[in-house]
Length: 201
Image (cartoon, rainbow, N blue to C red):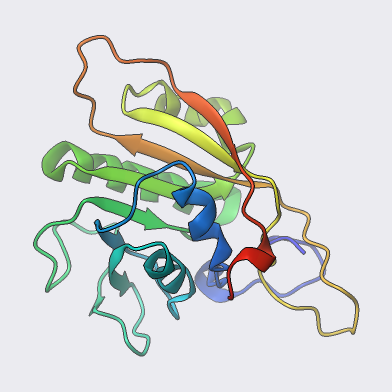
């Protein structure tokens, strides 16, 4: 099933749990071990636990209160959540929103933080997210580094009709980071081979 599939009630704030194996897919190409990672749309913590399994030290926040969060905080607001002074990277599956407009807002907020705090931003998005003409500015930005396509599809929610889940959305990690080269290299495309059976959800 897809997050926005017709025939299913849409979950408020796009609060779909991210399978933990998606973190291993990112770790195939992005160094995470030992880094302080901020997960700003953590929800119940599924992705955060996946990030911990690949060695990241994770700080969790979300716009809504959930058990075991480090802080309740709106990522689209200014500043940092209480208890987080610095971080090496920001990794999340953001709410995509209608027409992916919330995802765009998350990218723009993340890029503002890169400008002031450094580090990198990695967001899990639809694989064709960079195809829209209205979003080209996000990928012409010299801080855009890579698209890491998942070769397995995340299952966002289990079916209640007894049928086997058949996810339809191809997804990819999109990565931005502060540029230090005077002549930045072009973005790269990679593929992750992590599979749902590789990591316990």
